[in-house]
Length: 338
Image (cartoon, rainbow, N blue to C red; front, side):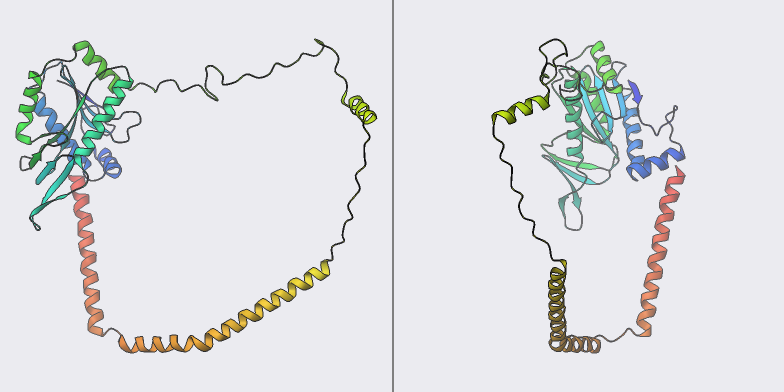
């Protein structure tokens, strides 16, 4: 099986440097390194079973798809999108739901992210991309591979294929028993168009796009090719001679009295300020005594903290700070270890 790595965080030897791990963790979260280790585990277990007619593309990014594709397996049997996850625990895949077992409540509950929905969405994106590139592939199968041997999944007509840790080789062997849908040339062409994505198709004809224009511009007359055009001034004079022009009477302009208007505005502002002052005095007379009485009653009901209570709060805050610092140090040590 040929492996093509498309991640920007792995060097030429397939190793992850400390700088790249920090960059990837900041971009994708703390689960990134565990997912990469799960991808490598799946690769090592598929390679002995699948031959050179299969191509495994890792960490592929397609145009228009924000989430990188963890694993894309291309072979004569078709195209499959694999999500390798190191999750540990008891889960249930019922239809399109993804649930985990809650030991406290003794029942399953929905959990995010929904790995089934992610796998199905990525497979659908690959199918649309390949069909748009001219490959009439009928289906891209989504597969969820769980690499932790202590993980169990209870399935009930799941949306995607679920492969546990002890069944990875069995999954690869079953692929070899399926009828071939593509020959070696088709496998190479599909792998090539995935590894080196093509640009989008030509944009529709419109403004700023080459192609047939939306409309035509009226032809412009060339000077000297036709009869002379009469000047605008002579044309206007001939019209004035044929029709009697009635001059418009100017409407009388009323002089604006700035002083009277200013006096009106000042008087209205004074009336408004008087009303506001009266409302404020009325509020102080009716509402203020009740508020002051309420404050005094609350102060009587809520006594101040005693010295022992303040000491207890300080001790609790100190231990919270110690726990926070220890958590940060554990995360940093885990990152530096790898």
